[in-house]
Image (cartoon, rainbow, N blue to C red; front, side, top):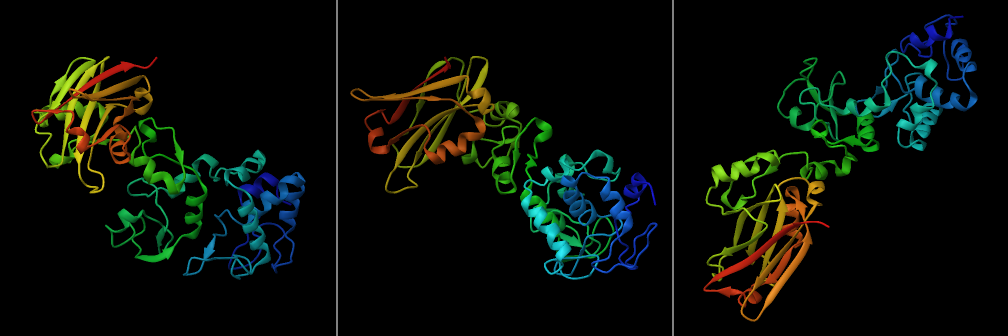
Length: 373
């Protein structure tokens, strides 16, 4: 009998698909009920509570000697009896073990260290199986593969006629295992290397990355059709060098004036305000997109992250001869500017009310930025 360590390293627990025999010392021909003495010897060395996990996962679901086989429709088949996975009692038992253990990482934590091989994939490296070999981003379902089983993300797949790894033709065969792996695991944000520590599900990954504070931000002057995108720390320099007409105030208490405010046209007005050693964006917007509520909206955001923004608060005030409207709110980061404008999270008032605050067709707004108590 082979030593247990040698058995595991050399994958005695696998069956060669073509010969249906144990590849080591006992060498029986295998029917579905036959026993491999090498497997039995190894399992006898393992605690009973861990046997089911090891047998189901290490024997039937890992791959190098006997690969996980699939038909053209990408449904798994048992490598031992050739039946569809749903009809094979042994393979079905493995699938039930998979479904009962969520997340997948919990399974591997109970496998004893002495049975781990040098070819095993660490739990924390499982999401790396989803990485596109071309661009390094995660491939998202439906994950398609070439004839030899290599996958690409959808973006890179559209750019090539053949697999860039093996040059095999690409086809429409899905890799259902990777599809399920993507749905069951928490993935790192694509800006992990820039400092983002968030782990997100596949369903929320794209939404998180669009507003991730460690990712790039777009130029706030979207009305000028500016396509600039870059780190938040470079936004102010971009605005001053490219859009130099924007007013800049160097104090924590400032007054800004939006001219021609009483015209019937929609517009968005911006200013830079620098105080407390940081830069802030002041936005005043007038819109009639919703015909039932033509309104004005004002907000201030920090050119930085929401975490840094928690140190500040702001006050906006518009006033006329007999009216005054004031908002005090916690500061948010630059990535939340679009969301705040869409949700109305700021100073909001109707255009009819704005007429009470206008003087000579212009609207004056007082802006005060202070540190949070």
